[in-house]
Image (cartoon, rainbow, N blue to C red; front, side):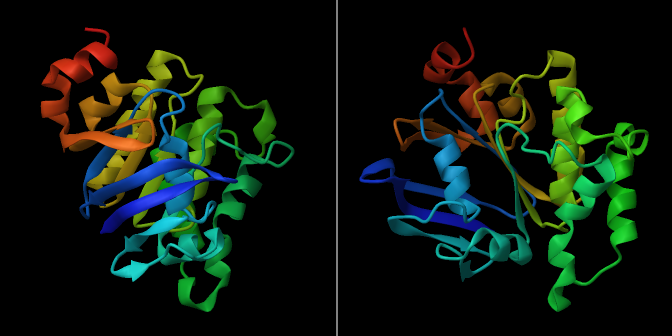
Length: 237
């Protein structure tokens, strides 16, 4: 469904990513793990259209999206939940969710937004109780649920999440990953970029270990959990 081939990207004159290649199958759950500064967020920004690659290609469902702006990437069916959640703080929960549905304004994306909203609120019932609450007053976990819900309102087939566990209590992290696993069962393809390797590999089908802007290891998530290098470097074993 998604193919990243020979990707090089960075900021200014410095490349952060060096010949990164990842293939994500339709309906799968992939984990991109690595330490802070490894290049995970740069990868996510490049595939979502927030950062233009220097070299290489990103192909989504057979179409090269490497040069598309972020709004057009979303309209193709690939949505990003950014690091730090980035909810619209002064707006209500309901307004944030409506903002996520902006691509439905385009003729090619018209659909029943009430059905999308119903799906989001069924996935995260806590949001239903807080539809009129100002987003900036939500807890960190509620804001993460809102950020995911906002992305789901665009009707994506591929959901990318950058550091969804950041700043959250362990019990909330478990709830978020349980929701992501259910979204996979509902048919979404998922790619999660995370420093929390333990819980991410526990839920993922496949994993990729990023170090200094390159993919150092790739394979079945279960095999990576058993790999001595991964256990020592990322799992504290």
